[in-house]
Image 1 (spheres, rainbow, N blue to C red):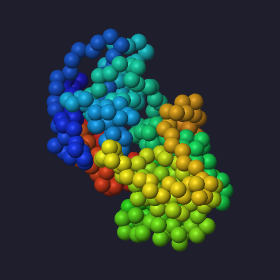
Image 2: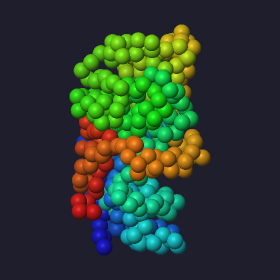
Image 3: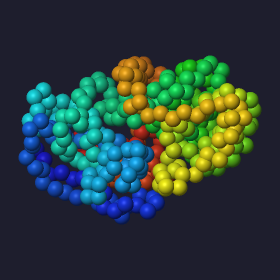
Image 4: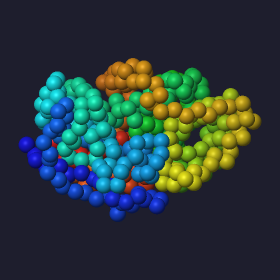
Length: 338
């Protein structure tokens, strides 16, 4: 068994972007297990936009201390345990951090089942709390699109947006995705069956919305904020609903959040804006997981994965996400060959 852990630590607070010099990768010997702890060989680390807000020193999410392991969800298998009922080989998911071996209390973990025919990584993607479950809860409890609605989703080729858009299609809505680049917009239309896609990097979002949705947008599921949010606000239909799930365009400078400057469109069009997080609906996490797994197995919902190998790639993966490079769920595999 490995007796050494490699982890990504937080070295200095970023002034704006979280550049590589804000992090370090260190190797350390493993300490003996304390009572009610387990040691987990981490198979996949989730790369999530919310991590950026954990590097500020204060904020909505739990903060990473200087010198601390970067907070990250992960999945792996127990390789050593001092806790009753937590046996070697059990698959577990939780706050494992950006590292190869996690030594954690059982209170930080949940047991998960192996998924025949599917990778354990699905527990971080379609079945993940911050990804597929977030999309399901946001759609079922907040957005609630109806047949015939024009539904728009930003960061539409990402882990949350792609699932939200697919659920909207299931509900009979006309779906328009906003994403960056030809690869992503083609994927949304050709693979996921969206009705249209807007390339925010190369097109005027406001003008394209006016063309694609001349009667206005009924539901907007926003993961980006900033200028994209303003463009959609300017194109709302009467009695529209704007759902705030995230704002990745703003996470580098949360002390100077931009917009929305077009919020008066809400009053003019008797519309509403509501934010949420999946943990506001704990009673729905179970039902969300059951239905998402059913859809995943029958092939009626899908999410691509992009995986970087080697825990030292975590920092590169985080930057890749903020540059808008990933399609679907972005993961790091700490050790190759697992």
